[in-house]
Image 1: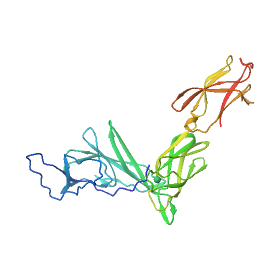
Image 2: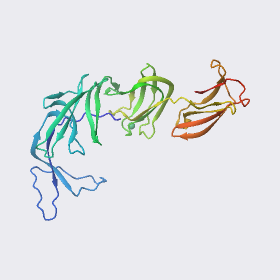
Image 3: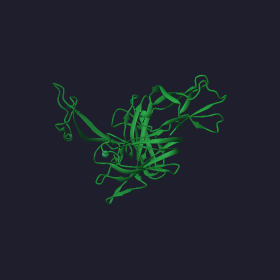
Image 4: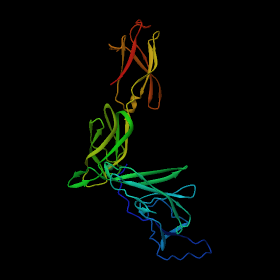
Length: 342
Ligand SMILES: [Ca+2]
């Protein structure tokens, strides 16, 4: 996720008309204002449109609302759906600043830019903490579902580097319920200007894990492994950046839940065998698995002679057959087996 600058405020003024190239035998439409310059660079990989020849403003326009940050998304029902904020739409106010921040949304009806209807306006409250404001960003209507994103600005914390204030230096991932996590991947922004050179993972249980520099071009990420902990949220806080560039951020972050080994086939007395599932160590779990037995569930002894054979892999999940060492069939009337991951 890159850190974004707030978009320049743009009132909803629909005024542009497209100037189409003349079909053979037709007179070209005269434009009131000069078309925008249109000299694509030589290295532009796209061929010029044969339909849309240019764009110009005529001065004809209609104003519908005194709010900004409109991103109309044209849906299959013929309507446009758009967020908005920081203004007033037909008497409804949205303000993106502060703990009571809201973002607005509305439906735009009609095909004539000069005669549209803005309807169903509403606001959605959402506290931007730990940031100071929240704004609309992406908006898409797909298969009847309106997907609508927001972003926050104005960090509650800053990072100073060579006298420059870096804003928005951290993010928080919050889960609906506690998760047991033991691994995080972090990828820098892929450009070679902005780079995080140090950071800190902070967990809701109060624990922290330091993170070193992220590879600048993001062709590789950094994997941070740590003893599993049960948490409801995790921060990544940037503590150091490459001097001279300001748009620090991540291109990707991934947090992995601990997958404890789970017995899938109970211990069979006659064969001394059982099976369990685990995350494939090849994906980088850095865990080793040992077999332990007990006759009373109190005293446990490692069975160093036990064999473990992978019998199947589905995605990241492996099934492992365990055959206990010692005399087979098993002699004790009760015997319990336990798989430990370290
Ligand atoms: Ca970078």
